[in-house]
Image 1 (cartoon, rainbow, N blue to C red):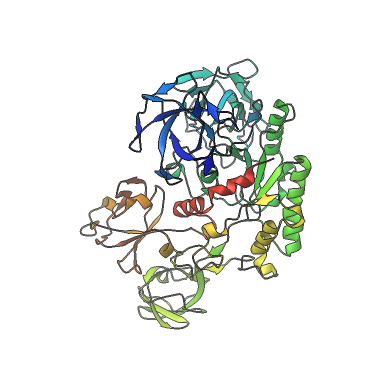
Image 2: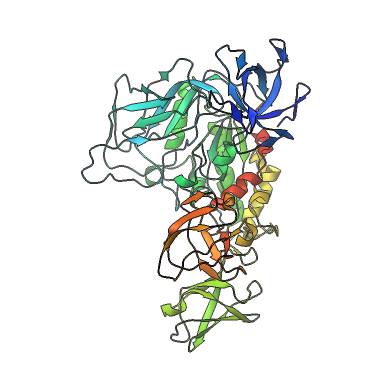
Length: 616
């Protein structure tokens, strides 16, 4: 990211709607893009700008200003001369090929959604945000299949069971509807299990950029991906096609999306600051190493064939400039030679063969831990005694979640008392002693120290199969056997402050306190709480509300909405005293980050790492 351009400090701008006169307390300026290398336009020195997408108010030690991109010949805007600018670090882009042009692009995947009985038509509406350059020709793809997620994914075997009939497809840009067509007709029938169809090219005169409005594809069936033919490359640095195997968006849904519709840390990171249009093609699953192989029930080639169709549209030119590879999260195995050479390099080599010369940038996978310990239980009356390997990470008064014990009275959330280096006790309703079954105690990732490593995730890499995940990271960073052309390391962004390859604890994430008691008598319900600082929270974030000392768990709701310092929750009657500590949950399983962790990772990976996505 350039800080000096044309002997001047680069300024930060937010692109705002035409007609806006004030932004961040300053008058909005009009700007027009200059060709790379131009120093003067119309007798004025060209300025360098970085287009920002977050809530920044200071950039490069200057106040961020609002700007409107001018393309209609005006020389004055908002009473001030229009300023010629050049986006810092902009790379030349081929102006005549289809590329992935919008947010929310990903290959079809997931479970089928069945229409309600008696429903004759289903109309899907997808709101997407375009990148910081103009497009004027669009195509949209509809498939006759989808891929599985999780388990032994990817398997492209999710089928509707019947043909899909599309009666019409419309896109709306700036409030104006434009009809798409299929082989010259308004609609099309997509046979079940087929590769699918593309809409015809739709060319709009001097069409849309990110600043001009939002394209809205509307159809009787969901559009899976879109391509736009580039017209002017204003701020674009490259296009990415991502292999996603972290399930990095699994714990986020619509309410957790950012303003441009992105879910998960990677998509939000790619689309913030310096925006990189991209499409997610990979699926999280234990058979990720099977990408670009298989047939029948294990086929994992059809999504890639859709990309090849775009290449054909482009006369052999690809719709991407770089491939991001996140493989290695879910498909670890032993010995390491099988994991790295057979699985990881096997896929990389298939990519290299299929897309010769394409730049490959690897993202080392996130870690995998557990917040549970194995225990045995005995009891005397209403006092249960748990025995475990060590209580070093436990403190008296904290809540633990006990599970897996028959009789069930042993199970639940209890405040414990640590009684020795290997035992703790808690009070319960009483039951048969000893308890049987496979019994665990969990602190729900309250602390980093409480976590244990999953198989093949022991940190740091020690040359044994127990640390295969981190051996892979080392090989990625070293580019061993040409496994990648470059890498973007995520370790510092997601691991806890101890630096031991474990997730942060709840105690390490931003928290707040209740400023007003919630609930009255334990009977009357409430649906919101008031905290000292609501800015740290986001919708869909699960909370862990503790006593003021941060030990006893009082309630575990999820946020449905944030309005200032008021958090809307599901109805409950539990009394929460003022001063109760409101923490954010980290992960449900030590694998998938919850929204607070998504934000931490996105902000923790420097935007400057995007320099590695550039191609010569």
